[in-house]
Amino acid sequence: MMVADQSRLTVEVIKAVRAPVAPSFVRSVLGRAASLPEVVARMPERTCSIAVRVTGDRELRRLNKAYAGNDSATDVLSFAGSGDHLGDLAISWAKVVQQAAEYGHPPLTEFGLLCVHGMLHLWWWYHTSGAERKEMTRLTIAALELSALRLSPGRL
Image 1: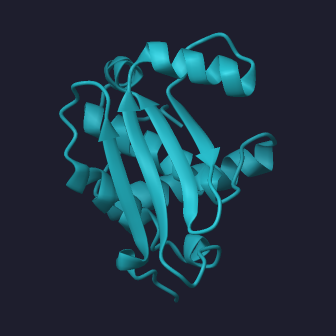
Image 2: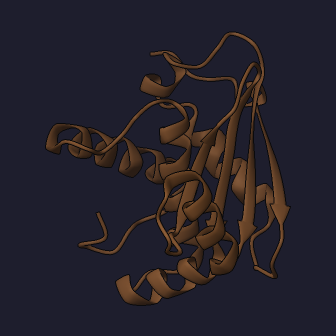
Image 3: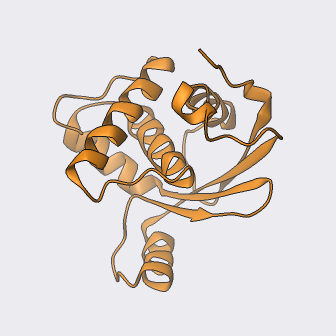
């Protein structure tokens, strides 16, 4: 079994809004997720990076409209990078709080879910077909378990 050296993934965290999320939490969740064998197989040999921007609905709506043509706020957006930078994630803290309350689990669990979900998109996993959704769900749950994060039933 291949395991990623977590030092091969660097994570920059930018907090554009007040949110009780420690950068070390974000780095830990994504580093552990990057140790899944399926992710290791897609990782480059060199050190790579991801930037995570914690922001609000207004910015997510603006980005969603500008880059996806959808005039609505969403919870997470992934933007592919180039070279050693895999890409950027933008996560709405307002959506994190709202969805955590809706599904009955802690906000940090929801935040971890959105981080992992966005990261998987950066590694070319999608959920357009039923088979793709099933695989992405399996990988997401496995990644979250590595950080002892448990989603409420019905979340995925």
